[in-house]
Structures are given as structure tokens and as C-alpha cells.
Length: 354
Ligand code: PMV
Image 1 (spheres, protein in one colour):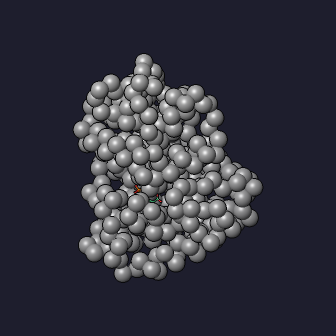
Image 2 (cartoon, rainbow, N blue to C red; image 1 turned 180 degrees about the vertical axis):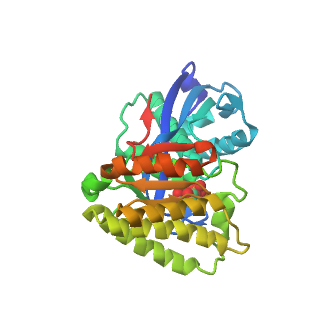
Image 3 (cartoon, helix red, strand yellow; image 1 turned 120 degrees about the vertical axis):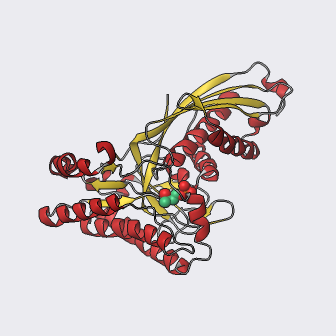
């Protein structure tokens, strides 16, 4: 691709892409951002990153990232990470050799607080790169090839981002339990694989602490390399994926709750038993977990919690139970959250082009 071919072509694309929450957790990776174990998540509806990507021929200068702003402000830390990512994407999106990008990013939730902001951001970036590639080639389609490439490209930015390219439920990582699953990109679970009871799952994200976490996910993944429980974790994730696929298909609520909480506690158990071990949950996290478990026992409603790599609780419940769970959130859980802060989220439809 040469500058001549694209002379004068400039434009912009605008994408909104969501975070996702894993029910079976990805934890540990191989070089090339390949997962140590398969994971399963659902894509969120409200926790999104919006990206405006302007592109213009770079002329005689180098292609790549020219400017970056986060929530209206320049941000050097993110700029450096995104610039590196865009350079690495030149091998996959050839136009980047000849074009400069100006990127403005906005998010609806706190960064680096264990809510998968990087998943939303990198999936938005990959969708934007794909649609610029389409525009320059005069194509309009965003079919399965487009999405698969976007998932592949998102993964190279942040592993879990590859699952945000699709709405609903997705699996990333090759597993004998799912035909077509791959380490290179995520695949969407077909609607008929999800019992109607689970299709509209709700997720109340309860903020215990929104300060930047002390140990990054990158460092956490690396500690899985020599982890004492590494092999048993790989086996456990396969077993839990198999059970979760079964629970989702058959509508088995008890099994669902059992696996979701087992995965959440395992993730943090793996962090605590790393060498060196570390703790991301806070006393407020434990207090919320106890409250949620008590409510489940007393009311026989299948609510459950999960955790990302941080102290905040994702309270997962079925929409049929919303009328009973929501007063519980308002009256009992919000007083336990930092500044009563929460996000009223749930299963979403995936990235949107604006
Ligand atoms: O995508 P990363 O490298 O930020 O890793 C995220 C891993 C977890 O969020 C803790 C689990 C998961 O599967 O999303």
C-alpha cells in the first residue's frame, strides 16, 4: 500500500464497545497473548468505551498514532500503550503504515479498577481499525470474517478484549468442550445454547474501591507460569467450562451459581497463592459476599457474585428475580459501596458503530 493510492482520503469512525465479565476466568497466558485455559464471559451493556478515530494520510511522516486523549485529556500512560499497539497492528492492517490516527476515547466507568476497561478499549480500537480498512477498500460488510479479525486483533491488545467483539455469551480458548473454539479469537455461543432464563442476565457492579489496583493483570498472568496450582487450574477451568456450558443450555441455576462463585474465588485464591502472593479483594468485598450468600439462603433466589481482577463485586441475577433483588441492592448493598456507587448492567448486544 502506498501513500499515492490513498492521497487525500481522510475520514473518521466512531465505535462504542463494552467490557465483559468472565464466568469462567482466563488466568495465565503463553507468549503471543495466548490463553493458558479456556474462558467464558458475557458482554456487558452499559460499561462501554467510546472511540472516535480520525485517519488521514501521513504524507512523508510515519503512519501510526498521532494523538490520543482519554475523557478529553491527554494521557501519556495510555498513549504509550496504544501507540505500541497500533504499531503492532501494522502487520494486520496495512493502511496503518501510511495513515496517521487521532484517537479520542471516553469511558463510562473507572479505569484500572478491575472492571475490564482494557477489554472495552481494545475491542473498540480493533472494530475501528477494521471499519477504516473497510472504508478504504470501499467495503461495507461487517460479517463473520470482519468480527473474527477484530476479535483476533483485540486479543493482541488485551486477552479478554477478544470476547467483547460479540454480544451475548462468548468463549475464548481452545477446548474439547466446544467445537470451533480457538486460542486465537473468541467465538460467540449460539442463542440456542443459552436457556431463555439466562439470556437477559443482570449484573450489578458494586464499587468497593475504584482506586488503581496495585498489581496489574499482566503481572498476575505472569505469576501463573511457575504457580504451584497451574496444572490443576488448567484442568479445573476445563471442567468448569463444561459444567457452565451445560448449565447455560439447560437453565440449571444451581449449577450456574456454583460454578460462577467457584471461579471467582479460585481467581483470587490463585492470586493469594502466587509467589509472591497478593490480595486484591478488600474487607468490603468479603462483607458484600457474605450479605449476598445470606440473601440467597434466606430467600432461595439464585443470585451470585463474581469478581474481576479487583475488589469490586459483580452481582449476577436473573431478570425474572429483578423485582426482589433490586430492593435488596438499593437498601442493603449500596450502603456498603463506596459513595453508594454501582452500575446497573447486564448482558449486552456487543459493539456498535455510531
Ligand atoms: O485481558 P487481561 O489481560 O486484562 O486479563 C483479564 C483476566 C480477568 O479479567 C481476571 C479474567 C477474564 O477472563 O476476564
